[in-house]
Length: 280
Length: 256
Image (cartoon, rainbow over all chains, first blue to last red; front, side, top):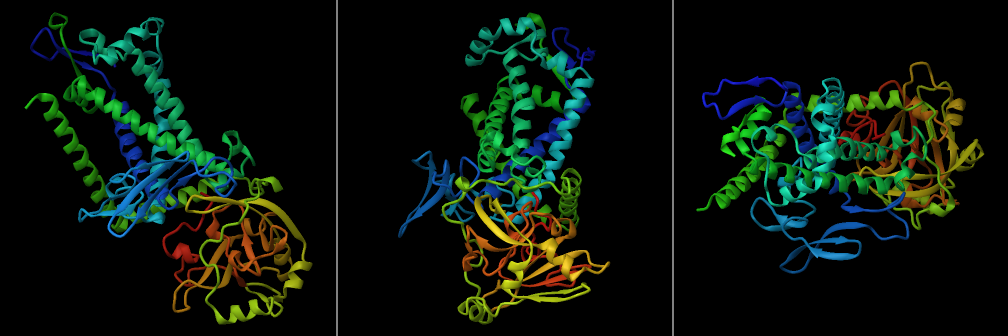
């Protein structure tokens, strides 16, 4: 992580070895696993496109979220009902264009799900296989991050980081990003976001997946009540999955505005170009 | 064209292209033999890991009367399209007999009264459907372990197969069936339920008797039980995967 490579000809910029091979490999395995988990998860959700709070789906309380379609003679409208409020989500949720371009009733567009058509048993097979890959990869990453001191050196915020948090927020809102030597380190918002994803969102989505398993629920009977019950766990699993999608969008956005090819190269070959101070 | 809009166009194109690529790639992959084998390996891993992590006698959560679902949802068959079954139902199941045979020392044929005379268990449990929904009901039934003690499984027996009255095809073929192993068969919460919410089991929920195997998903809980067969292997029954939905690609071990 700290080796400096000065193969470059210009003295004002050089390639810096930013990501170790282990981090790069685990990053891309994670990209594949999370993509498959999300897309197959949406297919599984389509088998019963409603979310509830509590132990069961059939209580006196209405659903927290429902996705459906309203059909009349010549129109199909996709509807999403969140906490009793209806939203027209035609095109994305409830109804979307099929391969022939016609609007049809479907919880999610086929390009967003694995497999492309509604197929619960196969979607479950995909989901659970990649859940294993994701879980093992994630455990390896955490152990590696601790052992290699990637966690303490690169991800843990320093005292200076905490003091710069206000400025970092303003910098992000203005799309100002670090140049030169400062670009070799993660900024404080970046560190906090990565730590939240790695140690809060991802463990939570795994745990809520476990909570949906009637087998694992029996290990300590009633442990799912910590979040209100199995249907609450299913709701949290779904919401966290979309929070992860939100993270990916912001992450990719930041990757693009801070230099798409430089960032991509650093996650493929490990090498990141640091601009010379003179160029600032 | 300014660089932002060309970048945006590039990004959108890349995203939808990537999506289509991922999807067609995945669907193609899923149709290859080696990948189906890989998916099956994942399933075996889950089965093994859960059997390892979950104690044999770990109990499914039980609830109180306050948690009962106002109406217990009927899923799948609501009325079996089977003349013989319908005749039994018309007669209040007075002529009903549950056959127990296969690899047992003492095959048996039990009336509802015989079943009610067996040691019973009452439990308020959550029914988790593979589709994602849950409902809570109060079940009373004969302990399967007590029945197995009477019929005495032979040493070679490994699975308990449940043959049902409801045909899954419109032409009256493909009767529903399910199977469980001895770990679940002897579990204290595994019962042959004849009551739901303090009343005789209604037809939409599997009258007169259905299986409750509480640590697995709903499709394992076979309704309309007619015959229980003990076998060494279910490879020669119907599609050979151990259950109607298993033959359609669903997991035999449904603890997840």
